[in-house]
Length: 409
Image (cartoon, rainbow, N blue to C red):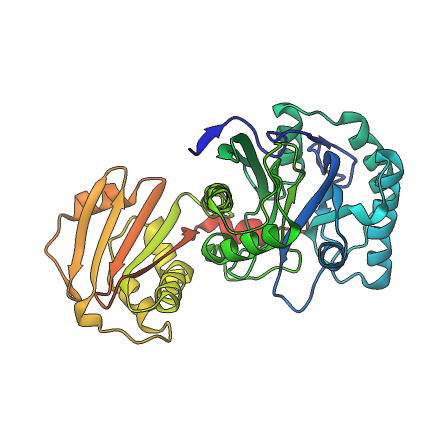
């Protein structure tokens, strides 16, 4: 049975974390470096940006995840992305890993690296390397450690994002927890989004990677804030086996209990990213039901959630359903617009806006109340089959432009 508990990346047995201010963000007093550490080596899995321009830490992590058996630590900085920095930037990943490995008594190739922030600047290693030492000294195994780490990876995020669950596997209680950051430059196929998930499950590296790769398309890849796919997107999943369950080597009941828990973590974090989009006032959820194929449902949902006009509609609390149909119409997939039903829903209620592609005579004031909530769902039933998909985004506000116009200053 899946149960939500307190915490994030330190909820699972054997995981420690920390967050400190190393001074990378010179004009800020906020924490800007984080560390995750496991008492024992972990098997690791990862998914990464599809952007051809990949940041140095993405390349470093891809090499380690694909070609190394174990990982034991993660070091993350915010403020500087270490992207478009060439061999020098990649060398800084190596230097950071070597410093951490010496302090943590593990191998440099067991230290994963993450960076987020301004693209095109070299890392200030005179602050990064002392920061690694500070992180080691600040490591904690309780909720405080996870909270510090979640705060330290934030950039334009307005809040830390973390969650944890327990479930049963092999008669043992297993814990999985995660944290992420993401607010702008967020778009399907990974985002300016760093996600770190830890579990004490005992499982093979191959099945861990398969579980993560299968889950990302329906969770993090269904998030869009502004249509920009970043250079640094990374989700890492570490499993140290300390729960003591019999090792999962095949897709049995325990494996599927794990994938259910992983889906819960990733869905929660994905929605938190969408709802915390830069300048956002509302989480915008789009559900497509009755699709003929999964691919059709995904494409339609993404097209609506990415539309600037539908996002502005949510911000204005205006039930202008034609914008939803319009976004579906240019998605590139075929459907009959004269069969589509549209419904708006939130904590304030549910209202049918259109039926068989035609607008209904609805109460405008009620619709405005529904669209004024901090979480709003649009459901489109295309009446072609049984497939569904859900995408998450946010409204488009004046503050989004202000934040990004001043991002480097």
